[in-house]
Image 1 (cartoon, rainbow, N blue to C red):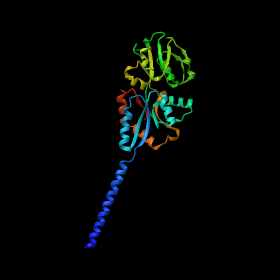
Image 2 (cartoon, one colour):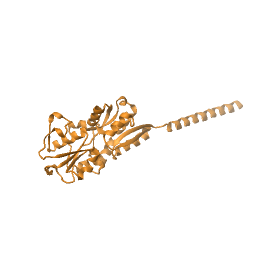
Image 3 (cartoon, one colour):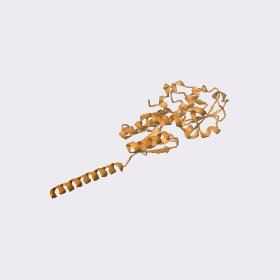
Image 4 (cartoon, helix red, strand yellow):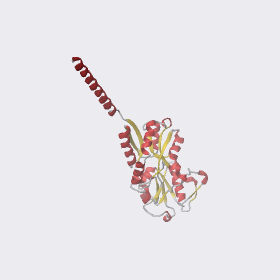
Length: 276
């Protein structure tokens, strides 16, 4: 009888020990430190990424931290110097141009959206109304200046030297029948300049931050075509971390139907998801 009692106590103790071990293990897993990923963005409209933040934290224990910048070059430099892990705010052509200029290794790991550039004005409602000698504000970095000039050509306002391809400058204008005057400004100043110029060519994100809706407020919006791919926005990492499993998880959580719906709702379809 005594032997059975001792045996029963031993079995109970083992059971309690197993239960304690399981509970401790579960507690340890729950308290496991989250993996931090710092993602560079430009501007204040980040609802899609805020949704991804919540999903990654809940399901993958990844703490996605949004690091906000005010111009498009800053995230490239920050990625290169290790201040951030990824960025998702730039067109591929802009990033590649800065890489080439500076010897950087920012590398595309996924595509996000196409954000059409627009011509905006608080003085006219159609490009045909533009007067001779009108002043035009353009972004001053190479790829966005070129993109803006190509849009002016598409709108029938100027003609460019075809041999310059996707990277013409104001020096490559071969025909300017309205004698337009060009003012080159930082991209984050083009929306503010609307009161001082006749038309301003504004990047999609900067327009949204200024309270504009590109599909409604632009007097001429960049058409979407097969030639638009260089202007796709990207998620980028350093070249030696392009295949990082955590970063690929971030991509997977971004490229979803839920995120697509958020983008379309928030931007009123001004930004176009391009990952399918």
